[in-house]
Amino acid sequence: MTGRLIVLTGPSGVGKGTLLAALLARHPELYLSVSATTRYPREGEVEGVHYYFYTRDRFEQAIATGALIEWAEFAGNYYGTPTAPVREQLDRGKSIILEIELAGARQVAKIFPDALRIFILPPDLTTLEARIRDRGTDSAEAIFRRLEQATVEIAAQHEFDRRIVNDDFETALDELDRLVISI
Image (cartoon, rainbow, N blue to C red; front, top):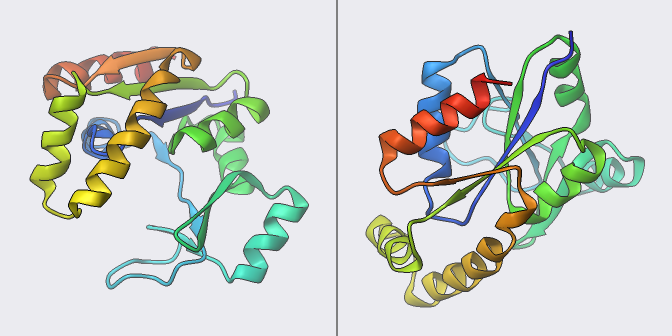
């Protein structure tokens, strides 16, 4: 029996990570994909748990050899999803979740056209802006950039199999749960 690949995407600040953490608490049998990065580990981050920490040369070799399902460069560092652990979990019959950005989701769709692709939406841009501001981690300029990017990402929602509006957290979580567990 082969597992199913699930791709979770949505704009920054929409609550993907919070929904995913709650889903994994409900269903520990699900496997969360671990990304690779060239950035240095932050305090408390563990190799193979939070990220696979690659050198730039190793990451570029992984790109060249097709050892990544998807990848992107952001703020001078590479980020991507190693193929081997994903295929290993799928071959074991486990469903695996990738929480990735739009560009990565598009790359995954080319390699895994049968993946379940779920897009998390905010109720509206005003609510999304308030959520980003309430985090208190971004400058006004960064918030503006995130909202510009969110507009681009939201315009691509039709590319996904399912869409969930994260207006009420419990309702959104229950909907995500039904989609993921029904596969």
